[in-house]
Image (cartoon, rainbow, N blue to C red; front, side, top):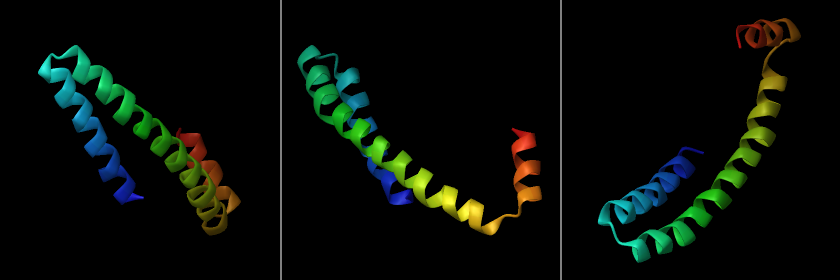
Length: 73
């Protein structure tokens, strides 16, 4: 999952570079290309976290521990 975070950073930086260029064409291209990639990667990343991390938490923590953690939120 950390690899996914680095991948997202590359696309974010590409959009920032386009914005900083001041070119409307570059901005639109970057948003169209990198924005769409970020959205798709985030959707998949969140799905993976929900499916993988959530199951690990339920498997590794007792009910009382989960209640204490959620109480802190």
